[in-house]
Image 1: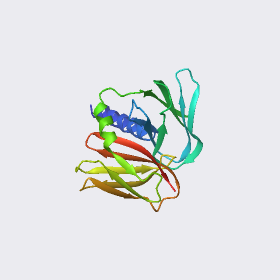
Image 2: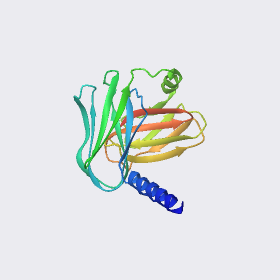
Image 3: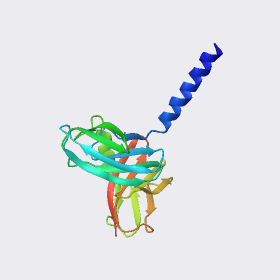
Image 4: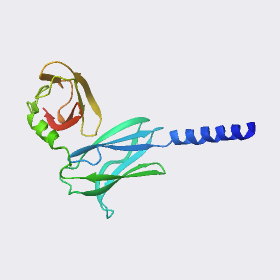
Length: 196
């Protein structure tokens, strides 16, 4: 009996460790309306491709093309606001591993009308900006502001508490296009901002 238990434990550990050494891919949110995030983890540094295909296998976007990337978790922001409503396939290719996930694009997410109404009250200005951004229209509860560059890299993370008007200082960032994500309560809002 001890031998069987020992073998079972060794098999569990072996296959558990193998699973930990495989790359992973998550898509958040999915379904999405305008933008979504491809979050993938690499157990070791490796060459990565991350591509999006339509249901007929036509290439829609090659967000990463055979790029050497370090070990760890990476986030790529995908902007699909001009895509038609459909089901797409996201493929993460790492060495000989291919991970595929369905990506659902909807023109209007059912049940999120309150989010849209809330988004209309949110103001991020000035846009374009030289560094200091004001966010108004948030309730008094804490909000998390994250800023991503065009490659999906997190460049700013800030928790805001207190008043209805909050400030984000992006003056240390180089000029370019950024995606600001505002999370508060159950809502997540995304806006594009140009830093001059």
